[in-house]
Amino acid sequence: MSLDRLKPHHATLVGIDSDGCVFDSMTVKQVQCFHPAFLDQWELREHEGPVRECLETVNLYSGTRGQDRFVCLALAVHRMRAHPGIPAEVELPDVRDLEAWLQAGPPFGNGGLEAALNGAKGEAFRASPSLRRILAWSRDVDDRVAALDPIEPFPAARRFIESACHTSDLIVVSSTPLKALEHEWEGCGLRSSLRFICSKDIGTKVQHLQAATAGGRYPLDRVLMIGDAPKDLESAREAGVRFFPVNPGKENDSWEQLAAEVYPAFLRGEYTAAREDQLVRDFLALLP
Image 1 (cartoon, rainbow, N blue to C red):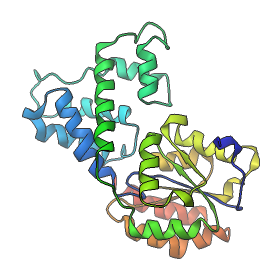
Image 2 (image 1 turned 180 degrees about the horizontal axis):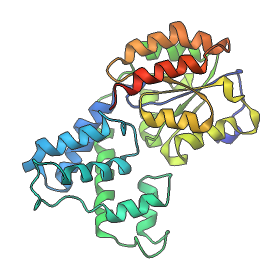
Image 3 (image 1 turned 90 degrees about the vertical axis):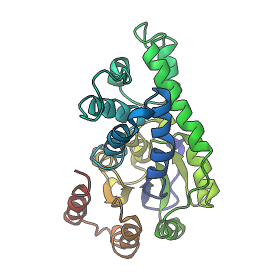
Image 4 (image 1 turned 120 degrees about the horizontal axis):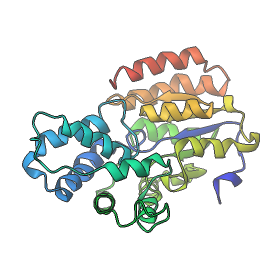
């Protein structure tokens, strides 16, 4: 089934981000997969401390948390070039071709980058050495993620999903590759609670929400997006739907608040913009 053929079983739709939101996996994947692959691909172990600091700031502890891996790679490299702990003569990734490729717009992914290298977007990217190295890094990341031990959902997230699937249609709205999402959701036994898994392979989070609500299948005020990153908030706002933030470092508390207070109000049509704004202000204050 494709997303545009999704038939409502309930009057409300809930889109749920995955990494760092349902699963306590964002930090694990960054620290154990993304960062070591970066250090190895560009032979930067000698400067591991400041390199990891830049990667963690961009990917975990700032307003760019949750952005696409390729976008964050470019941002982190710029941060490294200005870091006093990384000498100017150290060879860092060349992200000029990457940034030019990103300018063409999403969806991004290994497949899209490989197509660009094969000439799908003209000759500008064909056989770009820097893009080939970045693609190798991204594939290495996926291999490392696939080798991780299973990561359990936050307990309160599991309880919410198992309950809410009986009153709302639940879909995953994520920028993670589909293979990894299927592995995680099936591995924890929650796949059957979902109507659909939307991954980066089929578009952006905004496109996921727009496709799910196309044709008036769900009125926009009957759609809730749950996420742990500013990008999730931006996607909800652009798609015109309500947002609930899962606060980094306070994830289980957030899910409990959602289940006890916000979701019942949402079902009644009483989750107001003023209440959402209050929660969003507290959320953004955690991610400078």
